[in-house]
Image (tube, rainbow, N blue to C red):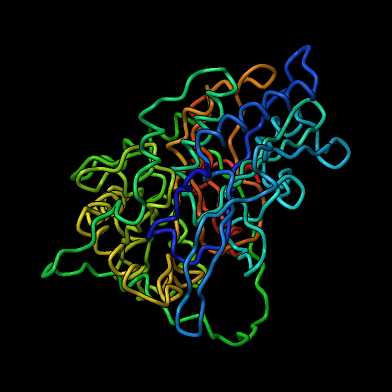
Length: 451
């Protein structure tokens, strides 16, 4: 009997058409062959797909018309039925050695997505008809180690769901039984998981996510290209401690995420004003991805893999106000914007998505202005990975990174802390913004450029 596949749900109907991609770095284990490593990975993957049949599927879109964006579905994917989704690639001749990658703090320059990733991430949209497996992995063997890439189709999973997948993948590698609570959470009805607004309930304001339809959009006028670059910045454990302490001197508690986000927003906005690229009287907006599982009432269980990300918006009336404010005030504003993403906000958003036929008119960062605003997504919740054993011959990763893929102006990823407590910030910035930030005295005192 064919198993019923978990569907993308309402949030998964937004037109992502791309992948969430993460790279884990593992040093070779003494006395272990690559075939033995691959055997562990294949065993883990097959157990994972058996427990989560939807991960062995593919995402397709049906019913698209001139006025309807269609519906995303998860259907069987023959290449992954009873077969491992882990690809093997020998990169010893085309990638730096593992020792050199680790010594350099695993910079973007050494993690070419076109080489080490089997799929493409944010910044690239797959077209109708292209194969989009829900889950895929690639073991890239380099001299002295392995770069293990995991890709999850973004309509089917968000980063929090992918975190659960990594947790289960590792548990399978160690030969441990799966947590039944996590398995049960995946069996929920995705279309009714988040209740819609009740009759008479007023909707929240989602104007920041509305944009013109792209269903029938013609070719866009092309302006001269501006170089956009990915770079990693390292914040040591001591710097993070000091940054959070300074940020918490305001009127409320702030997290490390809040502090590092506020620091980036204030310093880069100051640089843009100082160098004449941003008028002092122009507004600045920050949009942060927020996991909606915990804010719903009742909350959605941790084991749910599907897309449940909302956006928290923070707006500063003028860039001058932002750059001249105390760092603590900026951090507090950044923190307090999260309060807007509550049960009502998420139910309002899911109602809007469900009731809108043309879902290309709803998207994250729809009104963000490049070179002015900020889009931030945090992977900090995956900090447990630095001590997570993936099984015989594999061990625990030395680093967690995003590979260098298509640039997307003003997008930032907060990476999970490493074993030392250091945190890496991945920024995609116009070249002049990158240079300005790298030369900013306040930024240089706390952030070390990795590249």
